[in-house]
Image (cartoon, rainbow, N blue to C red):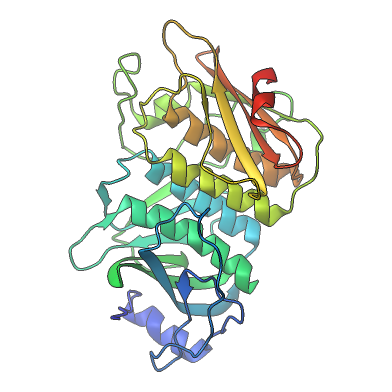
Length: 338
């Protein structure tokens, strides 16, 4: 297996000087961390049932480097969320170039996406990689500057970094912080991003800039009791929504209910139902991705991890209701009461 060291040379020497942290409980999809001489450490990988995993078995990763420069799990989660949100708005099977993501609230770690020599990386690989990255950091209980190589059938297809890359030529997507405006009873944030990307969301949107498009959405959040969830379970559950919601086109309409594929033992579940609409705006996957990203901001700002309801409105028209809940707290049918 060929492992490329994708970080800039000046940072690579910094890694050698500072040393490595070897995980003792590696994720079974991410291969062992490399030792300083480039050889894989002799670590056993646990055997886990992947039947409920949204990521294909052909996709794996190597954790190449972990620096002793920590950041919080909330910072990693929020910056990964906003990176996945931006990527999910594009063609799931399409490609993207080098890019880095950050938020005003958490300037670090920067989420850095890297391509191979072909100059692009498939969006689906990056989405899967970011999902697995957070799972891996939880598995080793070490939230620190790190780098991962993405592999498909053991062939290198890209890279992901969490840290402070010195790559000024890389496009910088800087997400506006939404948490300072949040209110539990009436959360209606634009959640806008500084980008020049465009998308088509059906004839009613007329292919607007994403900044204008996102500003049309308002989300009202509310806690509804139920069983508290572990922060890890809720964070991983939210990333699962992005992985699944990114597959359909952004303009695909949700006519009834939707939720990511899961099984009875999935701790954190998400379900959304559309209202009965005869004319636009309709509930579409673009709005699902936007709303879930705002839910992530809301949960971290409140530091309360429990059954969360969401009411989605576009141009002040209700288009749907959603629940983020523990598997023992609610059923999919409960979403109709939101």
